Image (tube, rainbow, N blue to C red; front, side, top):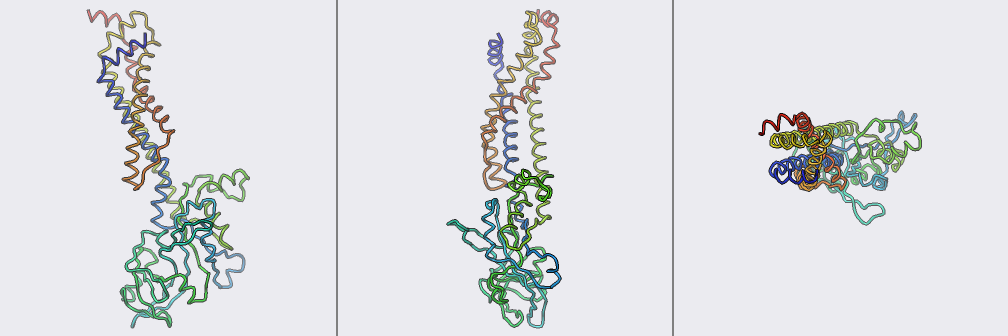
Length: 414
């Protein structure tokens, strides 16, 4: 009996049923697309935020009375690419080793004291144990820095920060005196930070000039990380073995820093909390916004379904009254509406899932310049959310249908 009623209902209300299926399909497509975005947003946004700077800093470890001696401690250049051998090596997007010295700079009748930093701007290095290469250097950890001119390839060239260049009154092509060495300005660097008051040159050249071959002062690392949560802040020293394994094998900035520290001899690796902390907050808020939007879309779609079903119910009052007069109880009336909702929901959910593939791909390309990975599990989520929308939309029509009095309806139809 219910099968015949459903077939008749869909046949007589083609436009209404199609409208409800479209409403559910659109709602499901948006929900599935937003969920796809939430699954991918951690890596996408983390990668975008690397433009604001590195999130891990490696420095020489200084303990006890060593810091009182006044001697500078250094890391080893040979340890730099060992970072690409850690468990989270594929999450390492950029590495920038730097050597820092002090310099007295003369430009005609002007002079200044500044930090002279040796580094790579962009350099291809061989990957340990692999045939490929990895791009390292300042550009990989601070791509937002603006370099006018070029990075010097030898000891004869230097790059000045924009503020330092203005202080000395020099431009690209001018020659400066660094102590007793003459160097040519080959580029101007503009970062908006303290680097604008510093001078830069090729790392190997600065090592050779200061007889510090193979030594570096610090290393900046840009890594894709998992947003920090309460567990991530727990001290590894007090963790159980199971907790430590979970922490170590999760891409928190703290656990990646720990693994980086293990491959650098006599080092201390720590998160740059101004970057790492902001990243976690941004991701948490974006995910909260996405889930809120999912809820709004589901409610809006269910309202659309409810409105259409109520209009449909007004045309079926006599049919419902007749069913009640023939002995249909509350359970059968509810079953009819829920059966319709289930069919509409499944049809709209499947259509919405197919549509979400197009929508999520569009969002990924337009926002992140790369597509979003479509997970097969979203099909079941889409079908479930579609049926939920349809069932939620039948709540009000069912309540109104149950209040129909067959005697009044049938008498009025005579």
